[in-house]
Image (cartoon, rainbow, N blue to C red; front, side, top):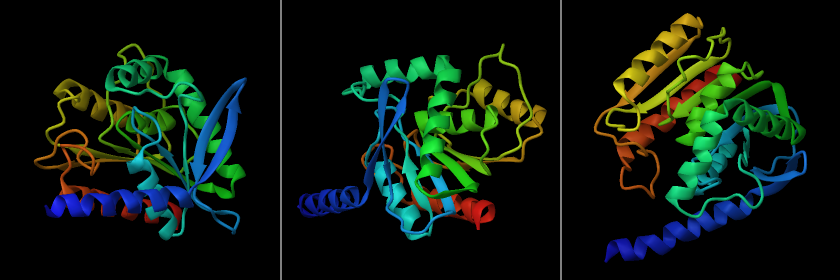
Length: 246
């Protein structure tokens, strides 16, 4: 019974938070993209670009944006897929996310457009970080791989795989990976190859592994949700951002 009482309160809180976010329309050619930004009167403040999971802008991304706003950051949630392309189920999400994972240059381009939009909203271009969840976590690593001008990236239960024929370029931005120990979507080979890639790229990198956690351990709406580990991961996120941007 207590869960039935708490559920409306949770939904209500999420709704209030969503209302505090301002929609921002930007474009990729003729494709409209609809991001969201935390309202901020000041200009040239530290910014965080949020790359959402495979179904597009979701409650986890919105809550993260609001929490980051409370910490003094301007947060912008990217729209990777664009108007008319929001998946309604896992199959559609997997297909769309797969397209961008395979065409990683198109993914990098959409991230760059979102970064530009964040700066236009008032972020200090010298103090920006990228965080991403799941598919967005993969995108955060792509931001580092293509050398976007950001101070750091955080991949939260993101994919670590990289095609073997892709060249490894130097990575100047700092990299944090928050990895659930029981993430079945990341193989041991992917994990080991990622470490090799980071070392070859001479990156400043670290991986924090969270015990007893499945893939989407930070998402309260997921069966994998682990409240304790999610709380620890968020503290690690804030610590990393504090080092980078303050």
